Image 1 (cartoon, rainbow, N blue to C red):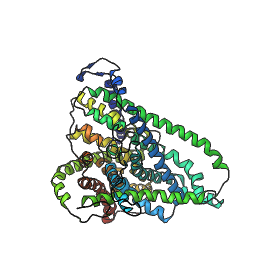
Image 2 (cartoon, rainbow, N blue to C red):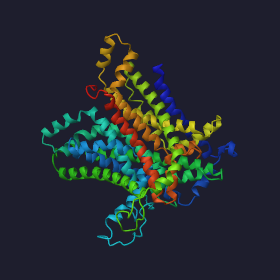
Image 3 (cartoon, helix red, strand yellow):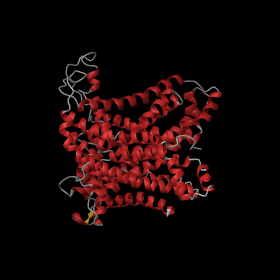
Image 4 (cartoon, one colour):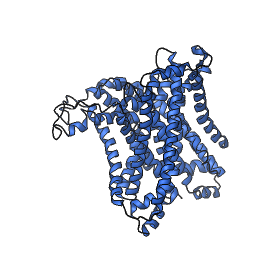
Length: 557
């Protein structure tokens, strides 16, 4: 049975994406009989190109996606080069998983509270040294160039790229390479950039592409931080999909195909940039320069990720502060009183979305974890090396959600499946599964096979050795992968909104819906609850193995 699990996984990842893309292509060219489109035409595209501000939306989506990815990758690379093996490296590594667990919408809300004209940063410098007695008249959040969105994406994507880099580094024997380079007189930061980075980047290329695909088509963060009138392309598409005039679905489908083209253009541009940097850096890699610029790289590397992490933590502090703030006039840094009124008013409304969020996250993560464990166990038993098929695992992450989820809804309706909770769970599992696999795969492969060989030499069957030996040894990484899966599911906005047709309400959908209201205290409550749910999963993942006395050492090769 295990041999069929990888095929099932590939089918579950590929079929929904391809079916969704196929069913969004047809209405993009005017064919959708249920809405009266009986023949192919270019009318949807003509209607799309006549929309005011379309090309500005495209430009902001393209530029914010590329810029945020470049900044996040630069922050991670400089940090690893400057801090490898230091106390700062060890300290920030502990923050990676909690920061990664915080949903995008919660980070966006906290960042908005931080940088707004009346936010925490403005209060920190008011009235001295800024001289502001009232908030400055400046459009910082929802700025027309998407700068707030770009920097907000950096806060969320830098921890992800750091986690992917840390998972890939053991494959390179980085410590030995650095020791050899330093024995030749290279400064630590220069040695890392010249010896480690050229081998590391190919291993994290797919995660980088996934970040570009997400950043160019993000919806929830764009609704909170992105520009308005015109908004980013993905937000405009969502509005057209939800328009009461159902004939606008044709134009929305055309826009979804355009979004796919924007993301593809961003990926091609990034690939061309890779080739340019590769050619331009060859001389530097081989010129023998050992210390030039090392001090600047060290300061920039240690400061950049520390600033990013502190900004994310300050954003969470801002959420907590606004959720309990009483009367709070500008420019006072702290509210005059702390109250629980906002929590008391929100508590009755939180109950149902919390239950729905928990059910969806637990079921989707449970299904994804079962499939991943079965696939990895089959890989170990068959001595397979499925590196070539890894891009299939990233397929739901590389294709913009908005580009295929609407088509998936249409495809589901064609076979008689209406938007409902089970469809939302399946949609969440589609995005949870890759993250669970990426989180668990390396630990699963690095487990010393001699443990199972000893068990089998004592007459224990292979299946019994799996339950009695492998799973206990892998309890900690397994729970961490589950926590990552729960965090990914809790943060999903677009799959819940489209596959549930707005009738399945979760903490995330309700929090994002509050963005248009402007009530910071109410937003603070919901966003803090959304941020706290994944952290509970990580706390359990860290404490449960120790409480159960699970093995902590000696399990890796």
